[in-house]
Length: 157
Image 1 (cartoon, rainbow, N blue to C red):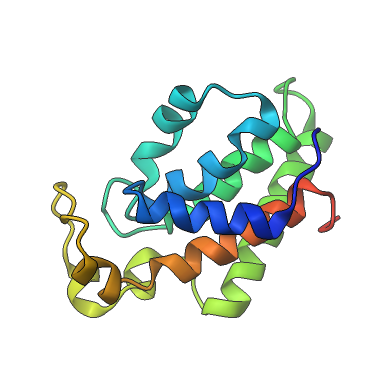
Image 2 (cartoon, helix red, strand yellow):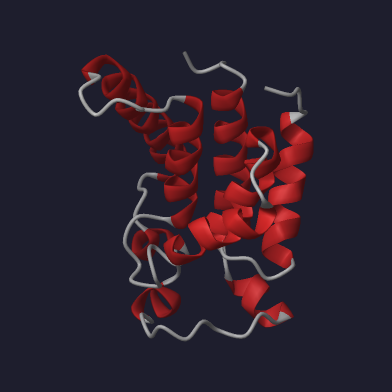
């Protein structure tokens, strides 16, 4: 795995969000190159997890992105490999716990302000300066990108 600076990746993740990517994409795309993943493929893989999975406000997309990245770092290639699956699941749980320790939940609707949390229409809001001003998502993206970076560097084992 190629070397990278976690804080530079955190900055990249927040820039991804400011550019219009959803929360899951913002984190996942930040590390796609680590696994030599085609950027368009990475966009396709992560797009549906934004807004707590398709704007349903369930598990925060940043948690989904960290989980997908854990699948690349700790793959389960043999369906009968319980040890590998256990290692993967343990890392997903550890990352979620670190996020939850800081934000009290991993549920999108509980992380968002009430008005935003109530909106589950599939059409995303326009990305304007007002949108970004009322959204706390950047800090969640920062924290998830930092946790994911630490995981990828092996610092969470």
